[in-house]
Image (cartoon, rainbow, N blue to C red):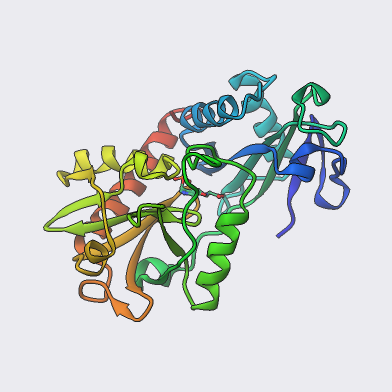
Length: 298
Ligand code: PDD
């Protein structure tokens, strides 16, 4: 679906958006990003995404030359140029900050000016039966990055590891791929976080298992507190997943998606469970009320 792109402040349609091949984002994958979406036309949990963007930037020693209000203005300008949101279409927004353009060297002194790109497209909801019937995922052999390599805390543009894991999931007919960490514990999915439900509680691997601290994951602790559902961190292994009553994944673009099958094994009853559905409903209700009240939701 056609995108509208803002490259360093210049807005164009996707055909006319371009960036130098000497940008270190292209040459070395040196960059970070965030994916947001709107509800009621407002970027949802904007401040939290900006906080994570700045954490990612500081972990690769990259300074972002814009303040949050300046980034917000750039978003809004691009969203407006894209003709979004409409009555029945929310916006998908991806912001990328790369090291910038410079010589073929790893020395950051060669790239004094970061590149900032905003991509805006109509947000595409997963099909209704993803939520109503749940999905099959694959437990893939590709290991989530060791925190001593490209730390999973960094929302990095270097996504080759995740892309390879997702390729394997696609080969196996999975909607997503679950990855373990280097210790063999469950970590997260290639583009989303993982939860299981056991005895009424929703459990997710701790951040120090080596995973991206998802904004949706974090928000779900608050949704759970409001709905009287215990949502907490716990180290998880394969046996916990296969013995779970329910499982689900979370992300900005997918909200809360029930997992009913992992490879050839059924999870729980094989249909979306009551805890998953209560958290999905609670999440949507909270997102709706937050964005219909405030101009920018935190
Ligand atoms: N993906 N884990 C990984 C590896 C991710 O890439 C993502 C997000 C998440 C969920 O994070 P959040 O709830 O903040 O969206 C977890 C986004 C949607 C993307 O890659 O576009």
